[in-house]
Image 1 (cartoon, one colour):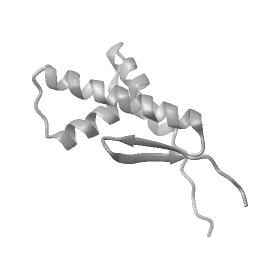
Image 2 (spheres, helix red, strand yellow):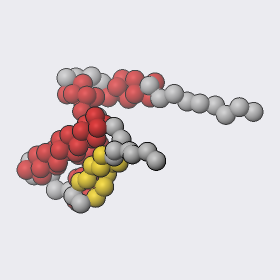
Image 3 (cartoon, helix red, strand yellow):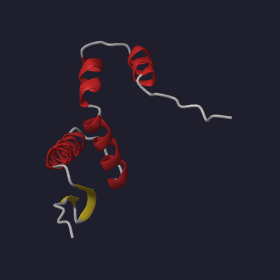
Length: 95
C-alpha cells in the first residue's frame, strides 16, 4: 500500500485543483489570489460585471499575467497571439 500526499486548492468553497505537486498547488493558489485582487480592482474602477464573468475574466488575466505585461508595454496583440499559437504543438493522427 502506498501513501500519497495530495494538495487541494479551494476557492470560495469549491475545489479548483487537486495535485501531488506542492509547487503547482502553491502557484495555482497564488494565481487565484491575484485573480481575486484583479476582480476587486476592476469593480472598484466602476466596471460592473456579473460575478461569474468577473471571476472568469480575472482568472484569465491572472493566468496570462506575463503576456498581459507585454501588452501593457506595447506589444501588438496580434504578434502576441501568433507567438502563443506557435507554442501549441499540433499532433496528427496516424493513418
